[in-house]
Length: 390
View: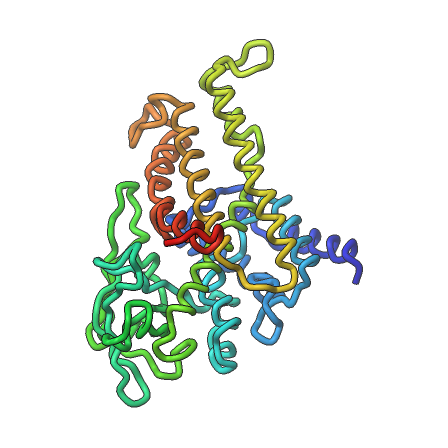
């Protein structure tokens, strides 16, 4: 089938199958569960999963769409034109799925990947601990191998979505005598078992996507060890690179229209001779949209250069650092444009958009911290990209 014919097929399919409620709306991870926990979202996911288009480039033998680079570009372009939300999102698709494709055994791929594509199983990440955040390799959650399973004891924190997840991928210490970056293993475990306790953490924005997770003799089967025993740091780092790469793609897909801020500014400042009345706001909007467009073009260039299927590398830290900073500045700009109307929390004196602006400002204070702080990303960039000494 030619690309033109494929495009026409995709366009007709999306128009017929993407519900109106899944079009033209913003998606933030704090709201993702509520957005996708609806009948419309489930129908949209199930319809796309039949074609494998929840994971369009994954191999068909694992439930994916098996699309070529060019075909996936067409699919993403047509979804963007329709302003359609992706049919499924989360750590299964963005993080553990790609990691299993690279490091997993055939049995692990066959068992877990199709259920990620179908949305049957939700995943969460067990990385950070109360004393091991930016210095992740200092983690202390212990896993002792006893026959065909590991016995896990310890605590994880900031485990996004742990309260609704079915499975967790986790870094655990399996050799406490080894050096800090050695003796760590990467395991998969079920969340519904005895010995796993989850407590949501309420955020200042009003939502509770983060959790504390406690392990008290929890079990991970030996067959769910990903990669080699005591060599999980390599797997764990690669997963973070997949996460940052996926985050950059979401930024590109999201792609605000260049006049999105101007639309808000016209409401609060008005125009003079066809231009926004406030010169400072004009300059800030110009700088912000230029930065966003530059990031989108850079992501597109890197995607084009990665067509060979090469796994993402340390340069994904650039995307994380720049993308998170741009997201934070975007929220600040929208709130600043609204003035005092951009800091309202509740009450009849504020519109729904103004209240969301306040919550967005609060949410995006954290984007330069979670997933690896900007300071950590700059260290990675200096060492792994620029080759500077320690």
